[in-house]
Image 1 (tube, rainbow, N blue to C red):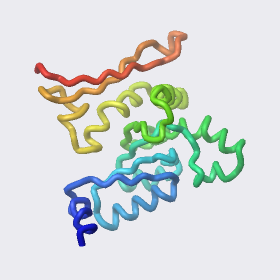
Image 2 (image 1 turned 135 degrees about the vertical axis):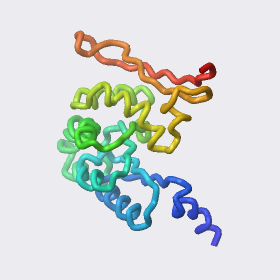
Image 3 (image 1 turned 30 degrees about the vertical axis):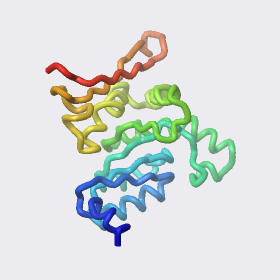
Image 4 (image 1 turned 90 degrees about the vertical axis):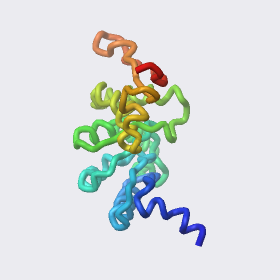
Length: 193
């Protein structure tokens, strides 16, 4: 069957599968499928609820792509308990997701998936820092962590050799000097090395 043939690279480990997870139940389901079929996979936490399943993520060792959209999905328990609880979760809990994963030692990288506007991406990373994520960890989550997660170390953000791509975040001002912390993203290809 041609449909099943297209899945072969994923089940033989030649390609990595990405599970788009909108809530904690989706994450648990993805871990079960990945474990059962011995897949190479990662979780894209588009619902921002990885913090609710830290023990399961830690046990599985699966890397996570974290959205910085900070919107409660309609399937979330917080969205179903009314507007006030949803608003509180979007203001406090979802921005703290990255800090909780970092504290637990879970590998993650930031994703712009479900981020409504490009300007909100960096703005929301700053919110994650304000909720406890270290600036250094935020920088790694937006630069060097992508390459190993996707198996592209030495090609994207993971090396400085000729022909590699380097993705960096530049700290433009210092939050602790009384000015807000902002980032400027710089991406360039290394041609001379």
